[in-house]
Image (cartoon, rainbow, N blue to C red):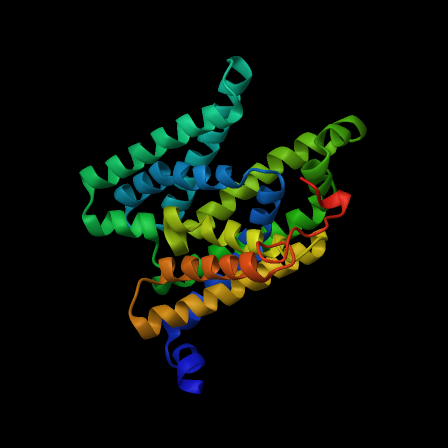
Length: 288
């Protein structure tokens, strides 16, 4: 049992780094994913994970594996898509989902085209699927720093974010924190997607945000319990996915997300709010 579960992490530094990165993502990105789910914006997380691709790809092709260039490029691309979609929504008859879908599809296509024209197939795989087993000190510091910033920001904005999830009109009527909470939260989404990009790539980063949160929602009917359970699911999935990757010699990023999916499907079958046990009686304050 020791050789199966513990030895890979004690014997290999790259496995310890990958585990540290996964735990940091679980602490930072997964709570953001829980709020995305409660705000009915889960698909926005997927759209934004694709939207950062051209900026990260340009940084990668211009400066190689430069952590700063790829991070800044991803953040700028994500913010441009968010702001452009907001402008189109307010200046046209298109709804937010349609304008966001249009810009993220264009962004995804542009990113893949940039990497395909200037890079190699290996470059495209690195950008799309990440390299969690190759995290260096700089990447770990970035992921840990974003996770720390996210935890402090969520602690500061917890009450307005919770109110905006369940009754945004009430929050706008009684508090000036509504725009701060909304745009601050969107910034946290972009930052954590960029953080996840360095470990899991653009296609996999959103998986560790949404799948553990969806699984936790089937078990929990209070917000603090939901957040804690989602983080625990994400951390366990990260460790299990790394072990699966090590022993079965499969890509680590997809293995981690598949473990998140396994937790989700198990919860869907066994949880009080799942398919077999009927619907979970939900308190009004957690309705979204």
